[in-house]
Image (tube, rainbow, N blue to C red; front, top):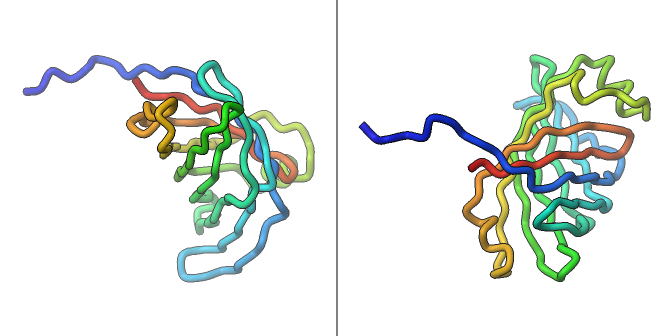
Length: 156
């Protein structure tokens, strides 16, 4: 039997604040209702990397029959020292409709009032950030009016 680690630890990588265009409603299809949220811009900052989100990425959100939603995100991060990093992730946002309505209308709603988790992966050719190419991450998120944010952790 392999000698597995007894625990998994995490290391905080960064917090992100992402500005979004208003949702494009694709409509109800065979898998659920699809909304597309295009990234307008934003910032990320942590102890090992910081910078901004390039416009044009997005979330191809799928509303499920059970009321939860699946995230399917692609975004380009530009570090303040000139590196470009592709960030992709899947995730789940499960919240009561009333909580989502309040948050997306601009009301300050605690992220503890809903379940919002992601699994970011990164890709870059910049040797200064090559360690991200082989790092598994998890994140917790929050949602607001025309914006979303995350706290991202590396799994160690």
